[in-house]
Amino acid sequence: MRPIATLALLALTLARPAAAEDAVTTFRLENGLDVVVIEDHRAPVVVQQIWYRAGSADEPAGKSGIAHFLEHLMFKGTDRIPPNQFSAMVEAQGGDDNAFTSWDYTAYYQRISADRLEMVMEMEADRMRNLRMTEDDVTTERQVILEERNQRTDTDPGALLGEQMRAALYLNHRYGIPVIGWRHEMEGLTHDDALAWYRQYYAPNNATLVIAGDVDPARVQELADKHYGPIEPSEGIVPRIRPQEPPQLAGRRLVLADERVSNPYFFRIYMAPERDPGNQKDAAALLILAELLGGSGQTSVLSRALQFESQIAVYSSAFYDGTRIDDGSLSVYVVPAPGVSLADAEEATDAVLADFLETGPDLAAFERIKTQLRAAEIYARDDVQGLANMYGEELTVGLTVADIQGFADVLAAVTPEEVTDVARRVLRPETSVTGWLTLPEEATP
Image (cartoon, rainbow, N blue to C red):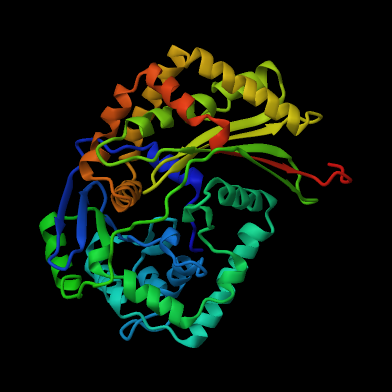
């Protein structure tokens, strides 16, 4: 499985800031490859990740899905690695590997015994520029990604609604196009399309190498110079200037009726600012806002009001997706109780949000959530792969090591007034898309 990063996983990553005492070393090779070393000597294990600054939002018009398509093809082999043997070679040494694509990046990783680091570095460096893929490979993998879309999206009404809502939220930006691609464009992806994407973006001057675990920075630099250093940089790397959103003047509404729906629900997405280098205050306040509104099924604002007090809903949540190069989003999700219409659930949700905008956060809940986020930060340091994911993702979207390590302090400095202020700026109907997932009128639950 080559998983596509989801909004929920990105929100979770954002909720796990690094501690200032992380042992992080950074350097850049002469060919432009950025290298990050995170030391953790508690177990003889190492994680290697290579993050390419090329995701689905960088794709040319008409070629949606090419970033994810190439992710699959990257496992086909090189002159030195037999076809379809990359993962098998890693597994034969007791390790595992995988890859994932999102709007802003494509990443590959191996987790393996520390004494096998050079082996996987040599393999990863080899396929950075020496990938071999035949027409048969392209034909086979095109069918694989089409079946993946069928299983994950086309047969899932909730996924279809989310896809349609993102397309409506982003009027001009390519964040509105699904990472996996639109089916009719995926069907037309060719060997030349994949090769062109690979040759342009898969280069040391467009990547960040993250090595985390039981490693010595000096040894990592030696190995990086040996295996990645000789690779020539690409002359095709240009600044990531993308179409931006115009002013949004009118809220949008969608209804998806499908006989496969078992639990109708109400879903709303608001446009929201992303985390910016050197300026993370709004993102920190939005993260706390999402936790206040729907982070807990027992104590959040929505759950208390809708699930326990009025019993209008059986489930509610909210989450913030801000680890982006461009505008992110804040979402609210409510599953009404049996017998409660989606209209009534939406009306009740709007009333709860309006009351929150008027009164602001409960101070005890506000302090509790800040404590929980700090605890999540501490626990996250026990997971070397989680740390590697966090540094890799956040550096790839333009944040710095100082931003990552300072985010905990930014969170700690957020005030209730700042949460209220950012809520009033973001929770506006004209910058939102509201979706209903429901059964056809003639169907019964």
